[in-house]
Length: 320
Ligand SMILES: C[S@@+](CC[C@H](N)C(=O)[O-])C[C@H]1O[C@@H](n2cnc3c(N)ncnc32)[C@H](O)[C@@H]1O
Image (cartoon, rainbow, N blue to C red; front, side, top):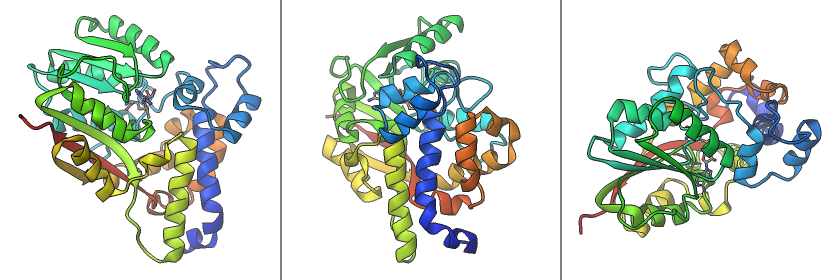
């Protein structure tokens, strides 16, 4: 940990909690809340709302100027958040080997940018999207219609943990930066197993607690930063599995050969660097989020995100 971070270590968890909460709840500039504004933001920070209400509060403000992406991005070859967000979706699509024969179930689709990208790039037979946030479903449907893709992408309100879908109805299940929200992730894996046909694939881009590392202070900060994220993003306590426990959940749901690959080094530093260097990206955040993020930007990504790992997880439903 850098000297500057060490000096301020005690205040970092609080700073991160405020940053995450303000970042999310502050996104009410598009006024989806009646009278939303400072009072609603302050109340939401004190009592973080359920996940659908949380995203309702966010309104339509997104990380990108093109499209309405809401993920941290995959930065290996990306130079901006505009490139990094779709790059993460492409990584998931490629890991799932989505192809023309596939029926895809995509949970937590945001505003459907990823589904439109996959429809164009991989041409699956059909994508059925499920989301618990009514605004995302409404706007996603309108955008899909405008893009002329309504015959191939069907977006519905529904939860990843209680899918309104029959058994064995799809070949691929995807969850792009959302499974940490699900109540619970284990419940989602059981549902995914149910709706997949034998031989079907599941791929997640997901955030989990990092393996404990370093001295006592560093480990305390790791735990505190996960707790801060969990509180700000309404992450259920049951989803706090680190890598080994996380992999075991796939086996427990019946999946074979889970592969859990850390891609944190290609996610967190790029996102953090962009917030530091890309004035237009930073300016797209609402005022309260800009205020809250500023103190965190003095720290290196390795310190700010020390408690988190970002994984690309894939597994297969056995043939028989
Ligand atoms: C961080 S956003 C990611 C959006 C999108 N995948 C992207 O990359 O831009 C999380 C999404 O998961 C959705 N979500 C959260 N809990 C859910 C659940 N239980 N079932 C389905 N969708 C859920 C939210 O409404 C939101 O659209």
